[in-house]
Image (cartoon, rainbow, N blue to C red; front, side, top):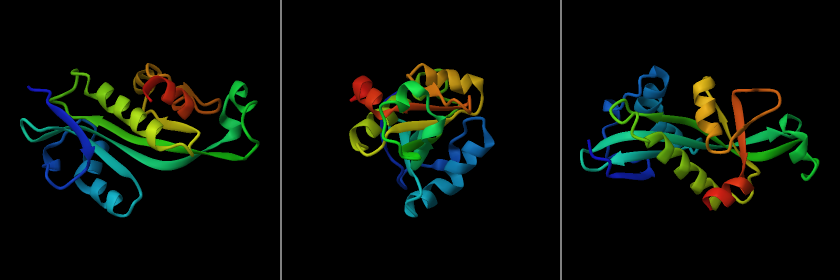
Length: 167
């Protein structure tokens, strides 16, 4: 299978119903809810589209969020203003179609998300993710994410770090 991928905002030109990542909730989100969330400006959804065969190889979502300062490690909070919460961007969902798993599409998606957020989000302190399990958490840790003090499967990466790595 070709990997002529282009990452773009979700549009109406791709058949979302054929997407299957093996996790029903992630499949249903793309099939039924993603376009509604985009229209309502609740989340942005970006798809990795394989234009050679007109398939969605994977997708991720971005949404505004916040981080309680008390959940951050002390080495970071020393240098931050004492606001109770800091602005953040949530990478809410990230999924790869089973036909593309094992071909680094997940890595392509996360790097695109980090680059997009680092370049467009100067008023956000961090990017955050809620990993579904330890394997997913390990995936995000490869890209510099660190666990919050109080939630081991919730991870963050400062936008400053993302800018250094991907800006």
